[in-house]
Image 1 (cartoon, rainbow, N blue to C red):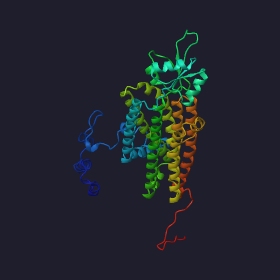
Image 2: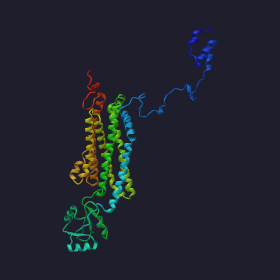
Image 3: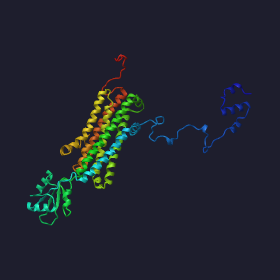
Image 4: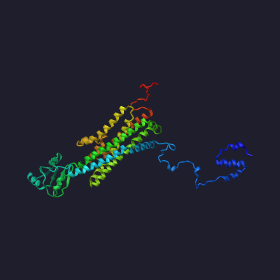
Length: 441
């Protein structure tokens, strides 16, 4: 007989225990118990009640962003924060509205530019200077072509008239008569003069531009709009997100799981890469519009300037976003407002300065190397044919160095704020009493 106490230790409801208890009560041979169990081969399907709840390794994130299975590296932590920041900002109404306004602005600029080109806005004067002929012959030539013609002594005098704007072209004839005549222009085709001549004449330029001013000026304004929209929209979103996390105590939760420096880097680099969306929209609409308008020659001539603009503008957005991160770390509301206003002022002034001072070549040279002004000034010099490729590299490198310095200061302030509970002003957190005075420990 089997002791009843042993039977009481067996939990009821368990099928295996029921089999064992019945076998013990009936004095069943233990070797016969093997027939009561079902052996499952490797190829057979395991019953649902016997399956182990383990996640399929193929479904695990390849970056190792699940802390239960992997320890996050600094790059993975930065990627996690950057993905969260960019996905939040890209789904906000402000981002969609800014992108829509940018596309509409580029389309409007294309329509206005085509209209101005059709009306002849920005063309050279229709006065023709002729070298080596008497004034009487010049008057007869003027009556023949129906345009004002002025006689000049030599080619240098004609160049002076071109630079002063008194003439649109200089008609240079070969004294030997062996070579055909040619036209000398300043920086654009004298279309009115070319249309009146009976034969095609080659045109030489004193200051050959890569892009005509009638096209380069609207494009420069468009570049300024792109930089302002990308930098200020994304910077404002970062500033607002940081203040929201601070008020809702989410910053401490993030700091408990992700290093502060990785969190700062993820926010800045994620939004900087997101700014390429604005640049891509603007450049894509511009190039497609020029192709539809059958101005592929202008699109090809704009490609070098647009390429350097995309690179330098990316570095400038990195500076502006880092500056917004730095401004948001202050514990004083007044300091935050002053820092935010200073960043906005530098961004707007940096865009407007090259557009206002574009006639000053020496000033434009220096502005093309200075951060905040280089994303507009450098492409303008490329469109005017006044810059070499290494100057674009220098401008991008200068902006990158300044961006690294600003980010280092911003990330240090952000880390100090999270880990010490104080902002850049050094004020420690305190508990206010009901009367308004701080409680003393």
